[in-house]
Image (cartoon, helix red, strand yellow):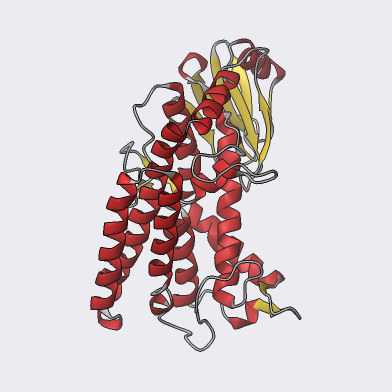
Length: 343
């Protein structure tokens, strides 16, 4: 259990929620294991919960406190909310900001700044951890380019300029990705990003990791009441979860790319975990997906100190924290959206 920004997160499955007077009671197997004053909470988020009592659901609805249910893996299931709720005001603000190029550009620049900052940190961490096995000078050159791109992103005057900076920076970052593969070099080679379909084992894992992170971000946005389809950096397109794609940009390098490199370099996965289809697509097989997801779930349990909140947070909770911070910004509680900057 974790209380963060007036939100109670239940990250352990099979826990039941009930109401005792003005308190939320958390129990498991008939034993009470936690008690929280309801008036201190704006939202309760339960992962894989065994359920909640009708009294608690009714009380949350009556007092306009959100009760959100997610699957064990973090997929959004349902939200209990009252007849009138602040979400409609939040979404209307989101739509107004998205329709304003000036306001949406401000948030988009913060998001891209985080992506470039985190990508640069991945390169610098690689040099710090494996400097004797890498071309240090080359990595420092790429890092310097990303530092310059980061400064340019902060000064971008329109969305097209921002997208141009992002595209060039991504090419620079991925140009040394293969160098960070230190073991199993014969079986895992990276010659550039290929998406639909992934054409090698590394791209297959990157695509799978990005899909998992995207699902987490979409659930996080749904949880706080934002519309995942209306973004600030990615433009609207029917069926595209643009705000979800915005949010996931902050986590690609540090949550996904580093995870894939860890699987390879620590020999946690090998070439037998993949299949090649007739069209050239390379995909994880059933056993490979099981290995990947098991390690991914373990990674989500790791704890870091959030750079903005200065509180300890599990990796798997980061999308929910960032979605909550984004909603706080849109509600006017924060002067600007504070993106996730890995340190």
